[in-house]
Length: 88
Image (cartoon, rainbow, N blue to C red):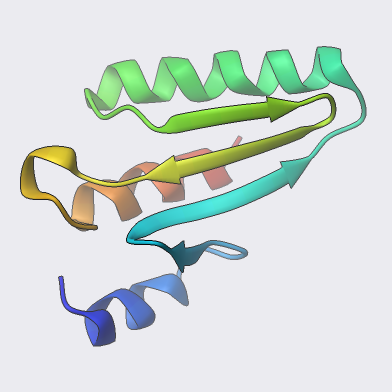
C-alpha cells in the first residue's frame, strides 16, 4: 500500500496511525490486569489471523504495532487485524 492508500484506510480504524512504517495504536486501560486481559484477547485474534503484532505493555497502557514483515510494509492484513482489535 502506498501512503495515500494507508491514509484512506486509517479513516476506518479510529485512533490508529502510521509511525515509522508501522500501523500503531496505544490503548489506555484501567490497570495492569486489564492490560493483560486485553493483550490475551489480541493474542487470540492474532493467532486466528496468523498475523502477530508487536506489543508493549506499560502498566495500564498497551501499544500495538502492526506491519506485514514478509512484505516489509503495511498491508490489508494489518488493517484487517486492527479492525478486529477495535471490536474487542
